[in-house]
Image (cartoon, rainbow, N blue to C red; front, side, top):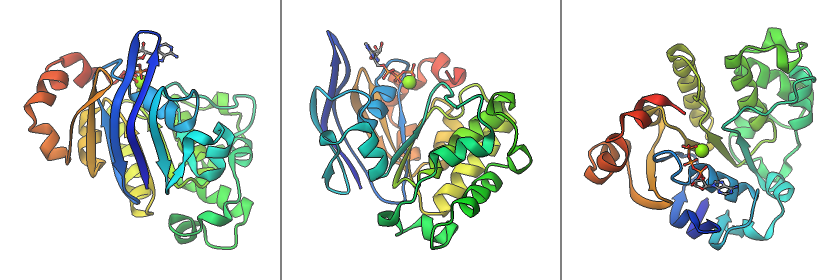
Length: 253
Ligand SMILES: Nc1ncnc2c1ncn2[C@@H]1O[C@H](COP(=O)(O)OP(=O)(O)OP(=O)(O)O)[C@@H](O)[C@H]1O
Ligand SMILES: [Mg+2]
């Protein structure tokens, strides 16, 4: 479904991403991990079109995303959350979802129909998203009044409201306590059961290891390993580059 080929992004002399090949299949929860500054967020930004790649290609369902503007990529089915929460603080929870919602007639192949039903009904679907995120009783509150954990849940629901084919989660567990992480784990597993395709960038290792199907490990912008969670945990190069540093394992930043 998503295919990155020899993807690279240089910022001046900094090779943030440097020759990344990666393929995500439909319905997979795919992990992208690596030490701080290894190029994970840059990869997410390249897929969304925040900036153009220096080299390589990004294809989604055999379409070259590199030729599409950021808003066209959203229309085509790419959605994301941010490492630092970005919501419309003055709008209510409902309004945040309302503006993010879109009809996606071309996408009615998988989780959309299973979950939302058809034909698309905006109110009904937003109600479903509120239930999914446990924010049903918060619908009329301004987003800025929500707790940190609730804002993270709203961000996730908002990313789903555009009915993406592919959803990119950049450190959704950052700053969460263990209870909130457990809750997020259940939500991601629900997304998997719905048949969604997810790229999960995350430092919280037990979350990554318990929800992903496959993982790519980045180090200095280069992929150093790819495999199942078990394979990655047992990979010596990964342990050296990543698990060797206690900060990255524990910090969640
Ligand atoms: N807009 C930018 N301009 C210049 N350099 C950048 C920019 N964005 C990222 N970089 C640099 O590219 C490298 C990769 O950064 P990136 O944010 O992708 O890392 P990351 O893997 O997401 O790290 P973290 O785990 O800390 O979030 C870093 O050296 C960073 O300083
Ligand atoms: Mg990052």
